[in-house]
Amino acid sequence: MINKIKNTLKYRQWLISIAASIGIFSVGTSIIIAQSIKSYDANVLTRLGSVVSIIETKLESTDEIINRIMPLTGMPCSTAEHKLIDIIVEYAEFQTLNIIKNNIVACSTNSRMVNAAYVTSDKPNNELSILESSVVTPGKIIGAIKEVHNKNGVLVTFNGKIFYSILEHIDDSDNFRIQSSKIWFDKEGIIHYSTQRSNLMVASEKYNFNINTNVSTQDYVNEIIQNNTFLIILFAVISLIIGRYVFLNAQKNSSLFIMKESIADNEFTPYAQPVMDSNGKLSGLEILIRWNNKHHGLIYPDVFIPLAEASGLIIPMTTQLMENTFNLLTTVEKKVPNDFHIGINISAQHFDKTNQQSLIASCKKYTDSSLNAKTHLVLELTERQAIHDYDETQSVFDTLHEMDIKMAIDDFGTGHSTLSDIKNLNFDFIKIDKSFIDLIGSDAIAAPLVDNIIDLAQRLELAIVAEGVETQEQLDYLRTHNVDYIQGYYYSKPIPLTEFIEQYFT
Image (cartoon, rainbow, N blue to C red; front, side, top):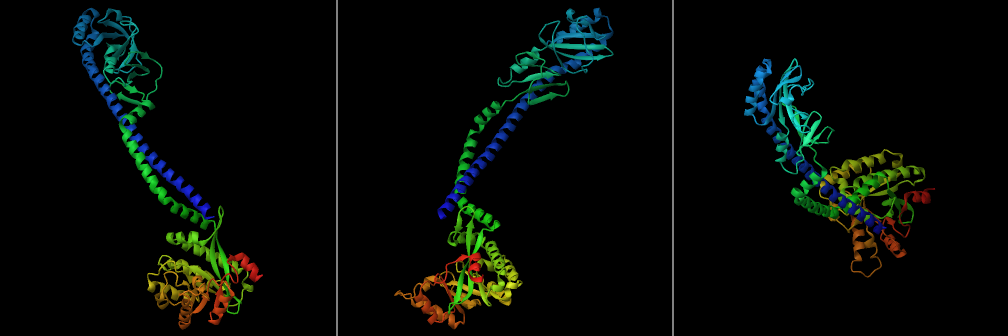
């Protein structure tokens, strides 16, 4: 059974440690990846913004040109044409300068534009339009900016090479594109009318165009591998170290988790062992806890009590045990003998300030019940833990005695209890541990210890309970020495309280 529990705990131990390692590694790498993507996007957006700034600088002179041409719109083309040519000579980057009348080019630095180029009114003034040329350089990209009022105004065009030459001089890995309305082209100068996928973009507010790109998953992967491989390896090492730490501590935590679940499922069962008087008459019982686990069956106290005490779970465990015991005995209280003793083990932890009220509350439920009229509750203080504050403990003892609760020192002489405990605390019973009872009839040097313990208890006027009695010789010896109560396999091993009730009270 213990091996089954250990195997279950080991499985959980591995599961928790692996989950911890994976979790920490996942969180760490997620942060690295998120930061890498953010940094990569910020870098790309900065470069996109730089391209926008360069193009805006190229377009700034269009404002000046339009202002210079606008006064020429009222002149005959024969007069205005020479002035247009003079102006375009100053600005080599522009392809044509045009005067618009009735939305058609009426005068131009390129004669092929006259009466051949039509200007629509759907595009706002002073914004960049990207077009496929059909007059000067058919099939090629041109840019255009107009300012037209009442179908008359100015149109400035420039070769698209100005734009994609800018794209050509940026990083080869950057797949940047220039877009105006639904028309866009890339650094190869190929114009597109279809909708393209992009996830990063910087727009020009002044000229209403944007530079965009689509960053792929592979781009991010390459960025992460190139710049963050060391950090990812570092996180992997840290995750393994923490996973190892969790592995070493998970068994305890897993055990606590299982025990907490079992308390919630009411799996800790009261067992009872009869306590007889010196004449062999049933005078009481001691309640012993057993863990009836739904997966592993019956588990004995030596497996779980140490951890329960170390973790503090012994408090709710005892509270539940007392409640279950009282509820079961109440069902047969009419058949319970008068002055029947109900012994329940408690821990030194019950006397800590944080736990005192829990113990007192459980005892009050007993004293307020009808079961109290025929029985005596005996709290047996185990010796597994030492008492640190006698004044605090005695205060609780006094409260319990006022409630007519009896106190016993359990397994005397085998643990932390000493003569100081008997001297400083007001006990009603001493329970002699089985290890001393086993000395009866032996030639061991320590055999007289039994006589000394019995003599001590009688001098202090404390009732004596002998535990672990198994033979007739032991029983006869204890009767001869006027020991009050006998408990042990001689009469019965511990059995479920439900069976005890059926055997003795039905």
